[in-house]
Image (cartoon, rainbow over all chains, first blue to last red):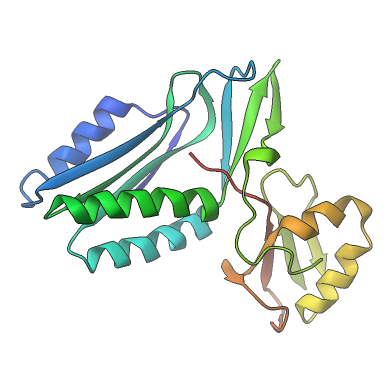
Length: 145
Length: 73
C-alpha cells in the first residue's frame, strides 16, 4: 500500500498501524526504513512535490514484484513542508523470512531515490529552493534535447 | 490538441500544441532558451507512461509531461 500525507509523517502511528495490519499474516520479518529531515546547510526543513499517477504505477510494479516473493511492501511519503527532525518517508517490507525483506528494502529505497517522481526543495530563509544537486535524472532523461 | 505539462521545479505553464509526435515537441521546446537545461535532464511520459524513444505518435487529447531530476525521501 502507498500512503501520501500532507506535511510530516506521524511515525509511531504509521509503524503501529502497519504492524497491526500484518500482525496475523504469519510474516516472520517486518523491516521498516524511516527517513528523517536532518539539520545541515542551515536549512529550516524540506518540501516535496509529488506526481501521483506515475508514483502509483511505479509503486504498483514494485508491489507485484515483492508479492511474487510472498512479501508485502508499504510506503508513506509527505507532500509539502516537513521541518527538521520530522519524518517525510517510511518504507517497510514484511516477509516470511528476514533475508527477502532485508534485500528488498535496500533495493526498493535505492530505486525510489532514482525513479519515484518526487521533487525535493530546501526551505531556507522562508524560500523554497529546488535541491538539484541532490537529485537524480530519471532513466531515459534527455529524450527531447 | 496535445497538452504538455511541466512538473516539479520547472516553472512553465502547460502548453496546448497541435503536434503529432515527440520530434515536433522537441523542435518547439528547443527554441525556448529557458527549457534548454530541463530538456537535457528531464524524462518524458505520454499519458502517464514513461517513454524511452521519440517514435511515439501523439493524437488529439494526449497528455505529455516532463519530469526533471527527482529526489524523494
